Image 1 (cartoon, chains in turn purple, green):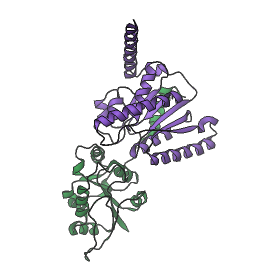
Image 2 (cartoon, one colour):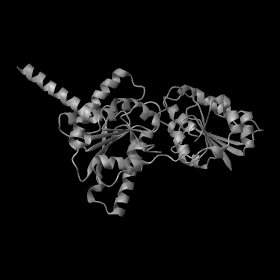
Image 3 (tube, chains in turn orange, green):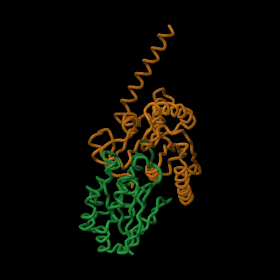
Image 4 (cartoon, one colour):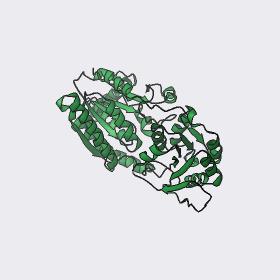
Length: 223
Length: 175
């Protein structure tokens, strides 16, 4: 009897996953998003070039995007400095423009890195599982409306957990993935995975748009 | 004073991908008498070299060399060096390529053969095809330096994050 119940639940879960995946693929997922006065953004910060790209993207967002939650790999001090520098700029802007009082809110969350460059496959799997376990409480705590990422390894577990939460109906976070400007012909590993899960998937070169038709191409977005 | 900046990579982390041998080769190529002569003919009086982890340290023993040759391993920020340079030669790392183009400096990318098939090459090659930079091999650097015309390069304007913001506003239902 219990076995039947479990099988039934698994079946329902499976169907729901397929429905959500299809909806994501048709870019209809915004019908799930209620119209809200502000958008809680979770940004997954990578390292080096990834960081400077995502900082430009966050900087471009309007004053409706708050609070901002920055997720940084625990070993990455440089990115944290860059985030603080960005926030300082945003705060100055906000006081000049007399923004809503909550606009200033932001926080920094640290999670373990999921994949170092040149890490072997087995350890990658183990550390990814570890990162997934870390991502669950993180997402449950913040329940962001939008997740913005551009390809560091850490974004895959977070986005997968966010997708899972929308499957079980706990929180629909819109996943926005922007592939790095460096990727002209091929997607990064994170991109190849999240192509299927992201609600909006941006590429910055027409060659990639030709190969990945579901992607959005608006020209170069960063410099 | 016209100066040349030779870049290994702008950032000191992320080094495992880059072999140092091919960069040593590039440094050696740049300071051969023939190349130095072309450079001095073009008015370059100073050559600043970032050697990274490379083994090859340029020694200025040749008294015939007219240029000042300086080198260092890494700096926290090389932005100011790029801004002061009149020409940058780099090894196709995305970071150094973008940073140089942003500073609106003429750039020669010398292909790093160790990076063949690496995605870092994609960007440099694309920007070459779009006319933003020169692109050559170590062996052809001399010819490229002799024949290049910096004025022919198309300035790189970069991207427009505002377009992204607009799109996101629309899909998130924000006015």
